[in-house]
Every structure is written in C-alpha cells, then in structure tokens.
Length: 286
Image (cartoon, rainbow, N blue to C red):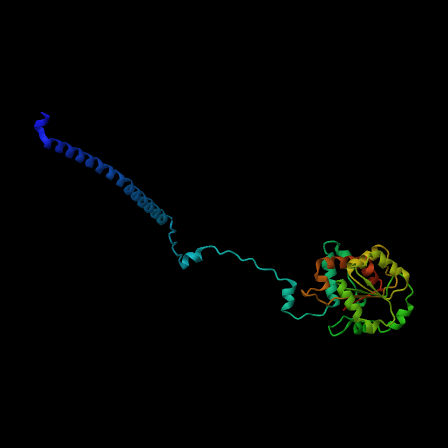
C-alpha cells in the first residue's frame, strides 16, 4: 500500500510538516511583537497621566479685587517710629542750657520719689546759679567769667580730699579734653582726674589725701563713689560746673544718657543740692 502512494505521498507529508512548522513559527513571531506594543502604550498612558496631573496642579489665577473691595478692607495701622534725641536735634539748632532746665530735670526725676512739700524744698533759688554759657565761651573763658578772683581763691585752698571747683562731665575722654581746654585759666592750680577708666578708686583717694587739690574734673559715677568712700568731701567746694551743652556723636547731652543721668541725680542728692541751698556752692551750666 505504501508502494501505491508513490513519491507524491512522501512529498505531501514533507510539505505538510514544513507548513506546520511555518504556522508554528508565525505565532511565536507575533507573541514577540506584543510586549513592545504594550510597553509603548503604558509609556503613553503614564505621560498622559502626568500631563493631566500637571494641568490640575496649575494655580488658577486669582481675580483682581476692585477698588471698592480694597477700600472696604480694614487698613492696618502702621506703628509710628518714636523719634530719638538724635532725630529731634538733627533738625533743630542746639539751645544753650539755663537754670530752668536743671530745675525741670530735678523736679521730673524726684516727682515720684518725694512729696509735694519735699519737691518744693528741692527747688533752688536763682541766687544758687552762676551765669550760663551762651555757646560762645571756651572752658577757660567761661571759668574766668564765673570766677574772676581765681588767683586769690586758689591760694586760700588748704583742705585735703576736697576741691574748690568741681567740673562734671559724661566720660573719661571728655575729662581729658576739658583739662586741656582750661590751661589758660588754671595757672599753678593742681587738677585731678576723677573717672573710673584705668584708675582705681584707692589710687584717687590717696592722691586726694596727699595734698591740696584745686580743681576736680570727672564723671558723676566716680565722683559719687569717692564721696561715699570718704575720699572726697565738699568742705572746700565753691563752684560746680556742669558740662551741660556738650553733645556726643549721637547728639546726646550728659543728662540724655540714662545711666549717666541716674549717677548725676544721685550725686546731687549726696550734698550738692543742700550746699547750694545753704549758699555755700553755686552751679554753672557750661
């Protein structure tokens, strides 16, 4: 029977086998193509999602408020900047100090510390004051004006631990500057520096006890400390000169600086105001 089929049968089988293998190959090739297509589609989907998300996250432009809506809103109050002493003085000419300025300062400082009767007792008479500097004087010319008989007065000074003229100013540098300015006035008088910078209080006490001193120039804090430590007394004191009109780089006077003002007021309490009321000491504003 196999012989009857002949050669054709064999060819048919071989052809059918070959076609079968080709058919099997085709699906395999198709399956190889499918993953690439899926990959492309997923990438497109991801990109589309991202684009949509970005569009959603975009900020919607706010509607501009009308002028009526803006005016209806409560306005915030701006805090007014407090004017400093420097601001005030920078736009005005400095005025020379006068006895009334010191009187007002004393009254203001003691207003919450003294009764009405005590405040009245602190008030100084006009006779307690020397003529004030009108901003035309140097220190030497001012001292010559208020103390014309200085040569005679300095010879009469015999007290130790005391001075005849006490000049009160704001800083150590100002002390040195004022001592240089009084060269034409002081003559042979002995001048002592009364400030805390680089000088121990014990050294100043010894210096004052060593011999007679005529003029003391210093800061309120150190002068007050010397009085408290009995290194300085007011026995020979006749003139107190306040460096009233001088101003620092910030245009502040001695009494405009809180800590110096406090020391100054305490110094007045330590006997200067009492000596003025007893007509033993006179005050001048330089």
